[in-house]
Image (spheres, rainbow, N blue to C red):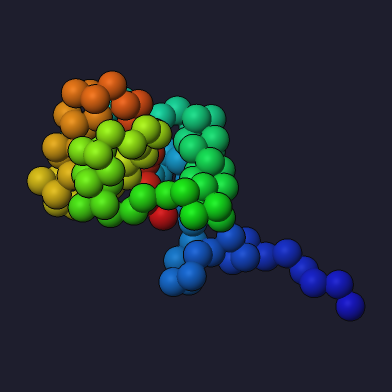
Length: 109
């Protein structure tokens, strides 16, 4: 017997349905600029999944800050819905000082 596809199948681990790109834009912080477009967001999520598979990803503010200070190269992807803003508002400035590319995506999920 074949399995039927349900819209609930797109739910994440907590059981809440995945929000669309438009719905995610409602929860953005005011500092989330430059925001990645819908197409670029999909490419960044794909790149993050690939980097995580190869253990080439840095997660968390402390770890990212440490590797930026060391001079490691890469792209910084910041979630636009992270609260409070004070936690990571200094990261874009550090990236600009060291000429590292960075972009905001609408959601951390």
